[in-house]
Length: 320
Ligand code: BT5
Image (cartoon, rainbow, N blue to C red; front, side, top):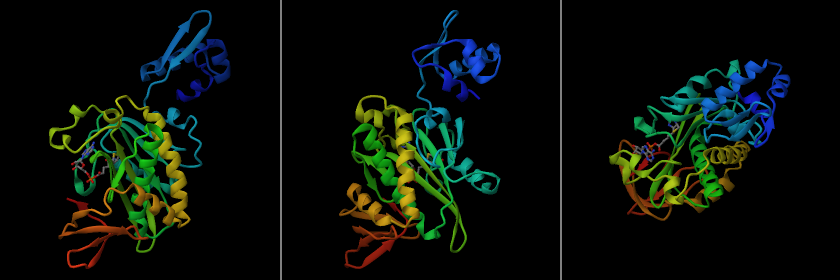
């Protein structure tokens, strides 16, 4: 554990090795070892023989201790599993979600600096290099499985609000799970669940945000339709701050959803919608429907008005 020493290490002021050793109840050599570990993680720390150690800067890594510092949530992000690299945060989260009885609580997060096999919907690939936010939240809502699309819509609103708070950029939501800036995808959401007929067992909400990714890094076949926050704002965004904003707003909105107060969330969704009022084609797997996206109902279904004026409710699909 290196998080504990960070509590006592002075930011821009020296703390002696002896004081640190006393506070932590360990030897000075053990303090030195912890300092080395922090430096290896990217913390800039200077040491002075007489004065001790001084923390100069923190890395913008999505380390649990950095995210939890000043997070102020009740349960979202209380437990974080951090990986410099893994295949997919959703895969790990789904494995963990099964172990609720052994202490995997609601709000547990899986975060990675990069994913080697990030997943989109329907087995599609999700490009996840260093510089993005790739995370999954484990939830155990006492709701019926029909709430799943509302959870995705709510998450989209939360992502928009978090991006807006940290960058002043207002993205738009393309139904059901894309967040766009200038018509290009900056974030995707992958909601997965296990459920009985009338009750959800667990939900894993995966979000991927292109934060500090240079455009030429995107694979050629998706370059045209992708964008990163760094590209739009012309500077690097502090990922820790953005992740914290996301988690804070997520808790607030998820609490609302659990209280079945979806209407106000839906109102905001409509405000940020890129889809409503547009003529679209929706691929529903077995068929493609064309029409005007006229509304989203209280169940989170998209209402499409076909050429013959027939209204169709669509629970999931991909706009093509
Ligand atoms: C999504 O799927 O948009 C859901 C993406 C969810 C990613 C997160 S990251 C954390 C968590 N762990 C995971 O393994 N996944 C989740 P879909 O609507 O199917 O869109 C997938 C399509 O988006 C791909 O087929 C590409 O065309 C495009 N795409 C791939 N990587 C992208 C990226 N980094 N930015 C924008 N578009 C991308």
